Image 1: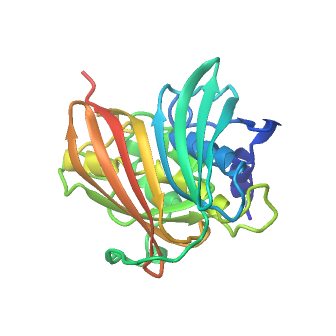
Image 2 (image 1 turned 90 degrees about the vertical axis):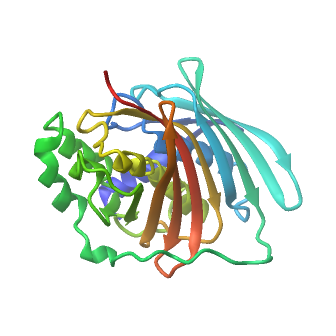
Length: 295
């Protein structure tokens, strides 16, 4: 496990300050607010640490209420809504400077058998045949509004090996494309068992963290926009929903297949499916975000 991955795990290992109250720190972000995937993952960690380890999350629904301050701790308060025979429900409110910035509801389920089917995994190239972020991002340095964007992007994803299947939005500015994108991702290094967060909760929280990185890309592709890095849109996540269908490991390759069915009214919708390398549909994701064109 490398230092960057260890740092990310430390970020998720919240400090318990009361029975159902936790405190988390933040890391430098690409924009002057806390990265949404970090808040969602930390909130899910807080909820999961009040639930038996044999009940992993099966869904979460969340709203981003206010921008988070990267320079201040975030306090997560967990409400134990219900503990049933099969399902457990938790509600988490994240607070900074006395105001709620994020709200999450999560449901956990004991393992059981039932009917089973899934959509087939879409075609995608082998991730090892694709360029790494360090190989790809410098190609676009002259397109970014700030020459430091490349370094900040690499730093923000240092713990995650994320590889684009096709050109990212900032690679084809001005060229409208099908509103669909794919990335492969995994942690940079294997996860060992010596963590505060038990598995499979840890894997699910890491996937939650990554799920907010590229989901709105397909909206930009449909309009030939490059995103905040090239300054042609202003965006932020509004809400986020995930359903965890099958076991996964965050340190194995996962395919994130993403599309956008609609954009309107200054908002856009992104839908994603996360598959394991052997074709199992592990996660479904839906997110709506603010997508505004600067005037």
